[in-house]
Length: 159
Image (cartoon, rainbow, N blue to C red):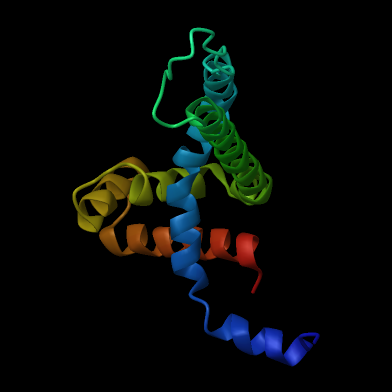
């Protein structure tokens, strides 16, 4: 069953694109960390990959679980698979997010970083910092935040 153009338009009306843009912005550091650290993590996991255990020739049992070695190998392979999947998702995210981020003006990026990524205790503290950085009144700082966020939202999700 295919989705018609009208059904797609209706669906998009109920998506809070602005909140989604904020969440995407806040995920940037996490995605960047995943991309930066995954290759080294994968090397470490692969280096620690256990091999199959040697058979016991004296007839005694070494483990209660006869498939313990295989289970360890499977767990390691699953860790590699999970890391690789997260890495690919982070790459997809960056391919989607970075063009929109780069299309913003320097001021828009700065305002969004201060308002959503700087770790201020409150939104008001972030606005005070925007006021100081741009040397503008509070209402202008709020308007600049709204304009920057609207621009990012438009670039990520369209109108």
